[in-house]
Image (cartoon, rainbow, N blue to C red; front, top):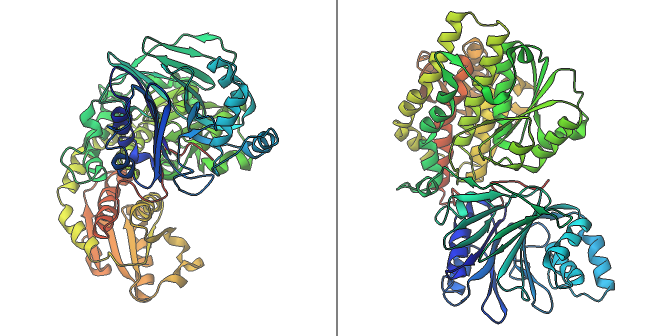
Length: 608
């Protein structure tokens, strides 16, 4: 959530900053602002609404000359979206400007102290506390002032800071909120995420927790909270700029839906060698893997739904007790960590605040923590004991699609690896499973070629108010993800239920004309799901069913059927979700909504 960019170099800063902010729009925001040093003073412009408002206000940066500046897109937490609450924030003397991602948890206490000292506040934000604290502690040394503030604030933050008295420098600091530093022949950059700088450079530093950075025309220097110099090694990002562009598609989401076969193949193929699953990144021997007695799958949102599917898969294939937990609930329920437990943290961004907190809790209790993330160098990746990266490339749309698919791919490999070392699969069975896994990308492509039937159906349900998804086992996990996709981008009330729970209350909501989407891909549960379809049809529901081609008889039971290819039951989530993603996409487009940037949502949730 929120986006930070900053630039100092030989080019005009404002256009560079605005371009960077445009590449961070996927993170979610409701206002934007920019501050530039023009040679005499720090000039600032900010506005509520989309970035285009700020671009028009500044003539795309042309009327804000200067080669040093910072910018921000804000997602409101403290204070409603408005020009005043937008970032940057400046002190009363207009000598210090700050942009901030995160939340200052003790801001009210700090604000009361500052008010007693005579400071005046013009906004409702927690960020303004930081500006006045920097003013209070500044005695000519910016790093020293920043350090003192960091020692006194509680919460999460990524900061971009300018001091009028140090006009040829930008300062940055972070704690539990991502921030990168980029560099090229034409300047230095700060940003919340890599896509913001991809058109300028692929050379970046990932800032660690509680670090401070000082950028000037000549150098980049890093310090810890005790003002001690820190040596860092730059990383070359292997994405190219085309990966963060729409490439002819109307929306990033549609592009990323169609990128899933390639992304899935890129994620699994390097880990299958000579018919064997090779997960060297785990840094665990087969003997250590055999000792695992329990697995906690911890995540938020769509990543949690991959864990919900993996729970069934791991227990069925590997015979290991598995739990899928929402990260936001996990540590507060005081989980009982058994001996030889493994905790798997799944996160697209690698910066999800609740997932990071769960990781730290698990490590504090002596558990081995494995991370499944997409962003190299992210906080979760750095703090986990081992990382299994999903090589999905940049995902720009707020509603995840290809990252979800790649997470499933890694979890399939992990389940099969555990099953193999525990002797749960005969060689012939293991080969059959691996062959099916490797065929999935081709089957995904087959499904995506037949989008017209899904688009046709979606166009007939643009005005619906309620949709219920149902399924059993892995189909229930698929239903949860399908429901989330729809509600995220179409704003239609959508719920997912375990089909067996219908008679425990949910069926009372079904009335004539209610749309019910039934997922029925699990052969051993197929007949039971058909019974549930009959139940809701008896109450007047219109049923959309999704099943495999061998169940042609479903056309007699449901009102509309989407068929997908056959594969192993445990891999069905990878195929079944594609038409349901397309359904959500076409409903959103048909309703005239902003598919890639749905209201109130952020790509990376870096606060609790």
